[in-house]
Length: 108
Length: 121
Image (tube, rainbow over all chains, first blue to last red; front, side, top):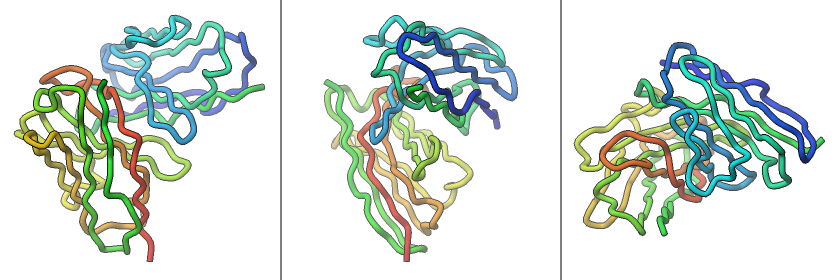
């Protein structure tokens, strides 16, 4: 099974900050990686797929990069509505389809 | 618009059974693979099961293999998860999710609102 390790697991940031979250895969997964955002009490929402493609309707301050085993999600200027937990997920090898452990972004 | 609505959650004793449903609307249900994903209280996301658009292929997480069965009724636009031999560690919010792309195993978009399953005596 492919393991995904996210770092950090928690980060505290201010509105307007640039935020970067990393996801590392235990083996190469090409560009078969997605990022999801989950707010408390809500279902996850797809933000980015194929490592760097922005899902329709997602603000352009979100971007993704990487391939192989190392990936990043960047929020260029953090907005109040961006405080949430973010998960990466791989689609390269299944079953199982695996998620990272999550990164909680909180207000400093 | 695409809508997924789960139902069937509740409280069940260890060893018991429960069937979850996910009613789909706003898209051609028979053209998309579907997934179940769960989230234990305060924990991360765990993929549970997948079924191909035509029901011909199914995958399961090792943690539920042999106990859970995913199925679908394309005539009713409904996805199911039959859960047997339930354990305390199956306690979670269960989400159904649609494959983003037709025919292929794909990214999860969108997700339903979730239904809570609690396994407790």
